[in-house]
Amino acid sequence: MLAVLLQTLPFFALIGLGYGAARTGFFNDQATAYLTKFVFYFALSAMLIRFSANLSLAEVLSWPYIWAYLCGTMAVYVLTTGVALLRRRGAQEAAVEAQCAAIGNTGFLGIPMLTMLMGPQAIGPIMMALTVDLVVFSSLIVIVITAARRGRVSLSTLASVGVGLVKNPMIVSIAVGLSWSAGGQPIPGPVNAFLDLLGGAATPCALFAIGASLAGKSAERVVVAGWLSFAKLILHPACIALFALFVFPVDPFSAAVMIAVASLPVAGNVYMLARHYNVAPQRVSGAILISTSFSILTVSAIIALVS
Image 1 (spheres, rainbow, N blue to C red):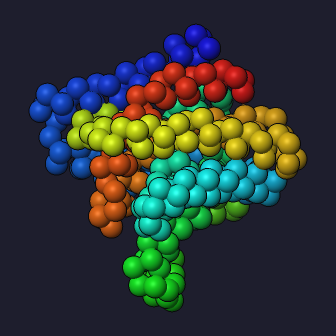
Image 2 (tube, rainbow, N blue to C red):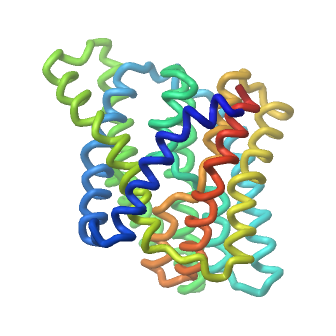
């Protein structure tokens, strides 16, 4: 574990640097917002296009993998929802808490870190997990909250979810890259150099942005935030391991990548959704802060275990 911890430390050190810069006021909220937008729409998109353009659809699409990840994530999603309903929190808060337990920071943290630690062959499995998160679970929270407020699931809600998926730059980038790959032509040299240069900014900028965004988070409702962090860091990879190793025929390396992806801390976009719908944003804030802090040890331990 120590060897893996030493490899992950530079990533978390960049997060800490961003946290310190924002905490001291050197980097304000507006700067963090624009840096996050740059990573999301430009740098990370370039990285995903370049990665996916060098993969075939066969390397990315694996139904046993998709089913294992979907079922494992759904298991922890249902469990967290049940606990929230038993606490009489209502459907909307239950959906937000379940999102905390199910969605990790795959885009900003998982892609750069796991690709370095587990090798370029991990890119395909990481993209499959990211796609399931975006298509299924990021849509599910919108559907549940909207249905709870309106008393039904309307076509307009489903249409808005579909439009949101089509506009999501990560989905668009993966689709563009795989479409280019399907043509069988290599990326032209200048284009590849451009994507490499722009995509190279994704890792440091994304990690710095994660840290800067944490400076504005507070750990209120520590008990609930701690439970959600435990569900994300421990229960989620455990459920994934159960389905990947014992239920579906997932190859060992892909299963290891899937478990590592599931061990990532709560994603920042869960807070954006909670704040947008005004449903338990402080609870999500605490879960992000606590899970990211403890993930320095838990992610390293799980990666060392599956490796």
